[in-house]
Length: 74
Image 1 (tube, rainbow, N blue to C red):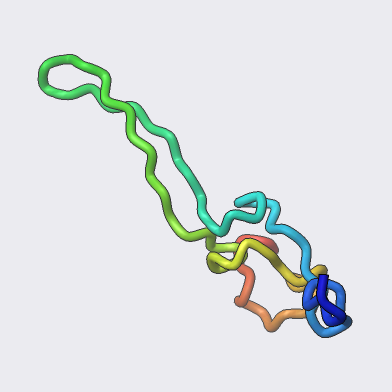
Image 2 (cartoon, rainbow, N blue to C red):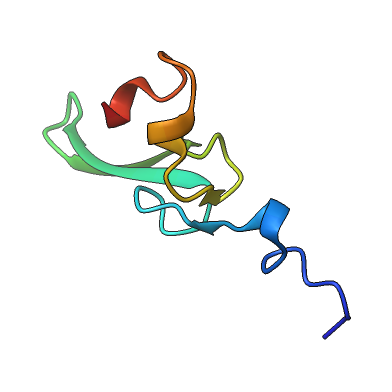
């Protein structure tokens, strides 16, 4: 471990995103029935909107951020 751990310094205190569990991606499982009545399973992967794909958020960011920056958290 280096002397300067960016996750522990005062300017870079972060916590894992609760929505994507630190991966930066949201996975949505779905099932569709095709024209032959067969079930097709799909996984849709998208960027997490809460952390913007970084996997971490600044603690209390939703309280200190400008209005509209975290609309899903208010």
